Length: 162
Image (cartoon, rainbow, N blue to C red; front, side):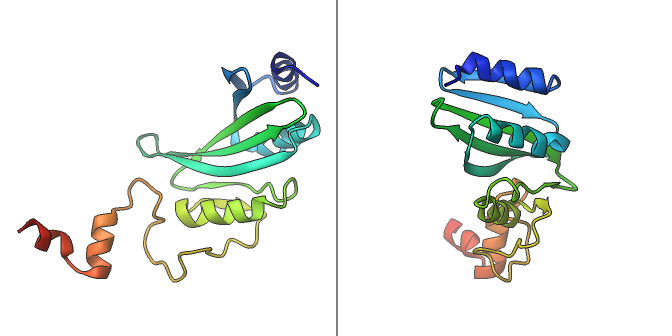
């Protein structure tokens, strides 16, 4: 079993340009360059972060970036790591982690569908829920849900305001 301090030392020793931050005694975050996602995640998997609990994204619209977040667990070390990589919002692409975790297939499909992020190497990014969707991905901060609802369902907002 490794302590959190030992885990941080191993990460920083292997990847000197990452930023680590302790959140609490059982959780930390690691900020990486998007080009490092496979190397860092494979390294963490090899030191016993076997479970990819979720893969999600955050829209930093003002900064014109998305942040792809990998939430990993090590049950033997009783630690959780949030691995974060920023990508360009106007050309959102990052390497798929399918070769590391089979469960990533569904997570990457979900993030692709709701944010529009491309996962290079995942050839199955079919919609899970939004079949025939023709608008911006709905979790992007520039998606206007009221305008979409008015377009699809009628001008209910203006009628309700009278």
